[in-house]
Length: 416
Image 1 (cartoon, one colour):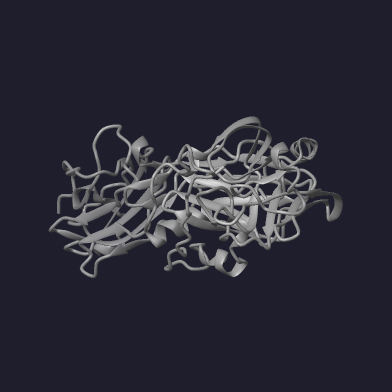
Image 2 (cartoon, rainbow, N blue to C red):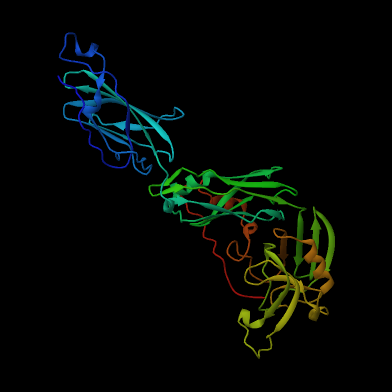
């Protein structure tokens, strides 16, 4: 029987380059065909992949089929590290294909064993490389906040450049996002805020004077059939002292703690009826020495008895919709005894300057005993700490791989 090589058809998306053709056998010669040396099986198999020097698209599976005069008896595919790629051979030996994804930018070796119609064995060894998926398919992660020193209440955020909705794909993403803390925070968990946003926090606040690193191991990993992990920049932040400011709206006092020890008690005023300050834990978002606050920004019409237009100093922001801790010299007569603000926490100029200088982004500002609504978990600042640890873990694809995160929508209403 003649086993001289012939042209092999090449279609599809995996680059397969012949690396070794093991000697030709003459199965028409004397001796049993099974005792002969394997012949070059190139004439009996078809490889699906582009021709030339193009690299394989890792999105597409590897496939090998046999010709009419033979069948495939075995295929092994390994990467450069010797790790096997899972595959499946049809019962009739006509088709073999990979059943697990190929990695991007990787090298593979495929060993194919065949048998012709007379039972003579054939062999072919092939090598190919995968390329990088196109940039529009790359899933990139941007970690937040920016590098720097923060308070112990600062969550880590991960913003994806493309939405991920499928539960299995979310599991792939979340397994690749790593957060470490030194000293240890005792573990933590990601929460899928929406299809493109994740927040990470431990059960309790971060340790004081900790170094926290966040990184992505998604590069080259298949997330979905059309989405692969791309390059992402890691993040390192540190924490300072544990600063907690607790405002009791009923006693009109704010007590500030450093590492568990009270360091100042400040007379304050909070939101009056109809403008009650939100209860719950908030996180300092930023500090502005001067802010112009106007009643029109929260829907108060000009000429109303509640209308105002004021220059405000030493303003520490705790919600995106405009809740601050700030100097309110016009209400010093009510501070410590009555709630007269439009939702902010007001104090004397000296106390506001001290508070402004004491806190940093990520520090904790908690309000208790207000008649206001609870702080939104997401969307109006960092209300993450108002979610119970049990409920927080339900927002992880690792603890609830088939269950979407609880819907905890922000209630955005502008205020001062």
